[in-house]
Length: 251
Image 1 (cartoon, helix red, strand yellow):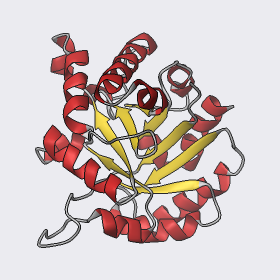
Image 2 (cartoon, rainbow, N blue to C red):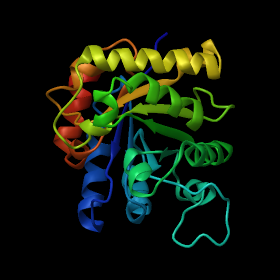
Image 3 (cartoon, rainbow, N blue to C red):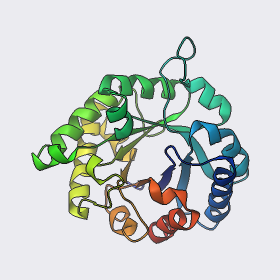
Image 4 (cartoon, rainbow, N blue to C red):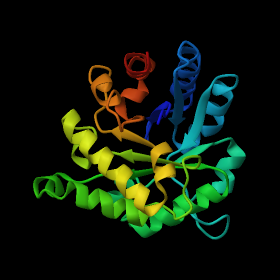
């Protein structure tokens, strides 16, 4: 089953107006040189409107880093799926390990967010991944399986869902699993998706790898059978690095 690679940038809590606008413009311009993969950037909420303007006319999709499950209401500081849609977002990240750790987000809450996003026509990028302690205990597959079963809505399809496997211990650390370890997890995740959804949907859903993805290691991960792109953190903050990941992997 052929799945187009998706190179997604998670800017996290980085970027002021000037730098964010230049970064978005740079990605928009450079992406025109590559037509074998899809692109996505997820700026902080403060830069979404500016990024939308910068991406106009390009093939780079716009996303957000989090969302509330309610359409509106008394939820100070939160952003609804409808608001993101109104801003021009097509994707939204849910369940990132930093949200799970810093804000105590459970699989149940992540599932509610993903479902709400899907119902508004957004594609939910659902993050999963094990901690170093869980990995050392040999529980990687068990943890990821539990997160998939609890975080992925029942009506998810390849059109409204992307999975991102990001081992928590690899995010921002410079450490990465071996390609064999990554392929093992991705293959296991696809099997779980087949049981939860259908084999047909599981075969089409894109599963990204994230966790210290850089230009010099992207190709070895993105060439794996069940790896369908990358969720890039720090390297997405520099146009040259972000596009080098795509160039090394999509050509």
